[in-house]
Length: 342
Picture 1: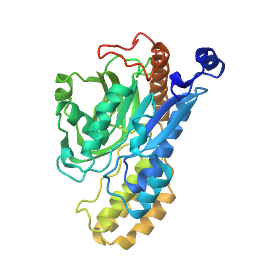
Picture 2: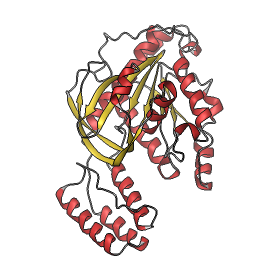
Picture 3: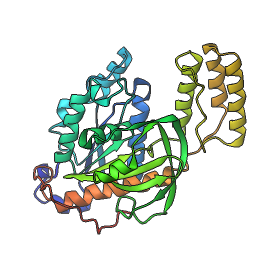
């Protein structure tokens, strides 16, 4: 609910009820198999980070994405139409990516709507999070910074180091871990030359978090702090399945820093069998093997801090700019960065 739609005494009422709801839009563009799990992950991490602050999540997706009949039914039953987003009165927005089909992101069928979304978010949100492939697409559109392919897919849990002071990374620890899962990366030198500020970096994975102010504060994540404990598990199973089915010629590398020693030994044993007897019928035994393993999510505390800082930023800016979102901020408006979002 936008502040302008509240009772004139909304500030007093807000304090009594832990603040007016922060309205966050989630544009979920993930493949069919990850649609519901992605929404659950973001809802859980936002709820975990929000504490007593009320947060309302509205879910959308871009048209033009390739989906099965089941995927289209899920979107129809669980997502709002993208046309509803333009007047939704959102405070913040989160946009996920999807597996690219074209060599150039600008050739994707959803590109015209995505670029409209970037422009709209700059004018109509306090802050927007661009997650992983969505970060690559937004940067490509805004500043023609092209992503580059990695020699092999990056997958695992990586130690990240804070390299800049910023309210969104708060006054917490200088180092944390975050899952990364991608086949491409953005060149840091190109980002810096176009005015992006790097907030954290992983020695083995490259850029982790970076920001740029384009009226709205755009927050870019190359990693996946929202992941639950089993997300990398499921992606690895998918990639192994693609190898067994003959869709990929290279057996996928195990996620780095994710499995314990016992699980690693089991995974290596299955890999040897799969290379000898490549057959899709092996996948059920692999799934049974995975079901016997335990995985943890040591990145959860860092994710809670990041999204908590982001929600605090939305709440503080919403309060500072009374009448948001109907009152536009000037292009030169700056956030009160002296505030501490820890």
